[in-house]
Length: 486
Image (tube, rainbow, N blue to C red):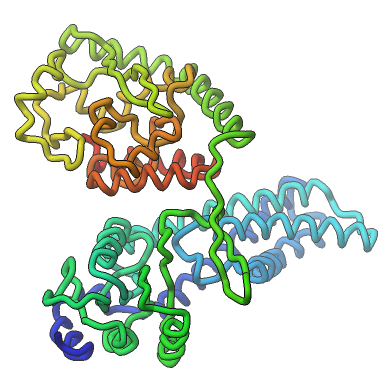
């Protein structure tokens, strides 16, 4: 196997040009400037809105008009103090939005305390309007800025070049996952393998044998980050030495633990005998959090049924008029703890679809235990439209109301599927299946079977009401995009 520099020269033409453009530090500065500009404009707009709501025109209260003009500087300072421009939070996660929200709370509390201590009589109408409006405006603007960044990353811009180090299977998994979700902004350009191989590439990525070459490969490829995957060869001392080597080129280092699918809230660093230990809490399937989830599910389901009943009635009429067949399709599925229940959907296939399944078995395009055909001849014209917008799933709201399903959860499986589950796959049955889930917001039917299972297990391991809300929010984007809807 060639050295790192030789490999970099050999593969220089194979690396997409979009990965060679602006450096990470350059586009990070540009993004921060845009964020600061947006924050300042939102603060100015919120101040002026509050001024007009409270005072009506420019003829009075010049002090508050001046305060509105100074508000952008104060807001930028508060956001900066709370790390609202930290590059670690650019483009992914909720930390960026949480810091903007915290800035609004801190600014409101700070003004209230200062005005009370200094006995300043502030116009409450101005304060009550300015700070909430500012926070909401800035959150919306930051979200729009992030979506634009995601679109650019989908085209290959604003990416960090990453060199990964680990075993071939974990490297392959990492490359595949990052390519599937480019909005994270990480593009793998090379890999250093712990296990020797004769292959010159993995998933189209050039590889070098030997973990002692990581720093050199990162330098040759101009990497912004080195990602060390779960690898016993990297002891604490070896990682420290690698960090020292990367320090010279300002290349960041991140380490992926073996428990990749365990979310942050369930893990914490504990110290014992001077050693940092990663403590992992057990997932909570009972108690108050679960009760809150049940109440939330039923409340939202009942409300949605009331609001969507005219649409559901119209869909039922369309299905009936199309071929005079049954409106609903029902099927036995497996729920929490292996209990079976009957799921309901709007019928999207011909009435004899199940009878045709055996005849079409040779055309199955899905892996694992699923049966999927991208262009399924059994789908009706109306059914194709319903599937495109996931409207066929609406009757499952009744399943949520009666307690068989949840709004968010693993995909409801067929009994013949669960009969073929391996041990780790049965973990999906620890919670109620959902109308939507991580599998849907991550690609729906376009996902490989093993990736869909991994996402379902990941959801079970990391469930929280906040995660449910995030998935529900992302569901609309997944549906409107239409990818994987077949």
